[in-house]
Length: 384
Image (cartoon, rainbow, N blue to C red; front, top):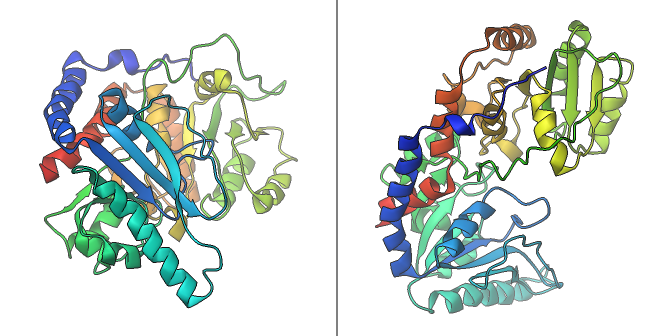
């Protein structure tokens, strides 16, 4: 069982100062623009639990920048979950018309959606930032688009599409996705890791502990987060559980109906324990229960463009990670051990647990690259 304290206190003063200095230089750019419009017609970033991209809005409004987030689309009333209290932040969906199976209704709906965005763009000189997706027919009609951040699906918009051609910057979460766009747009394509707010207030230290079953092994591997069969490799997990009886395996997170059926096959193993949910006050305890973080991803379109933020959370608690080699982990080459062979993963996981290396420098590097202020600064530096 991992007993390390979090590594946040080991971040150097120079690294924290570098974040602030870079952000202060970028802040003048955002103050000139005055307003940032985030839009996504297919993804909802403000469902509960929310996505890490919310941290961008939080930083902006805390620094006096107005933010409008058009989150998903629909014609029925929808109230997004907004945990950020600020009169500078408005989160709402991009409205559309019902009956869009008829071509004339669809065209009218697209015109209306375009006008909703144009109306916001006419209010000063705002930055328009597409998060994940925006219908190409809307993109064709807009005068300008500033940023396109590719989300989990790397193939939602391809090079040559109106969105990709018109935007001034294409941000990818991993090296695999960057390779898709860089050949067509070498001067406006960057790998920009997803923004993660991470500080000592995010993971509350608490006396509340996650209690493992009696007789559970003291050495523990596992994963904290949603895991679905489409993108998580249950076969490798089963191999590890069955071949390492002296190790415990803790999985904390949601899965789907197919995943639940797969989990039924794990019930015969006394060294496997699954919790679909734990309260936030126990999350730090759950991370400290792990000796190794297992990111056993499968290749699938739905996470081809993603980056595993769990690697940063694990490092925050000094927990080493191993992962399968898939597009999602393509930017982790040389940072953590990667393999798609079950036996190699088993050996790597055991070795990482035994080495007890100081991982504070790796954590500091990823902490810096994934800081929301650095994420925002990269936009200002490319467009300013």
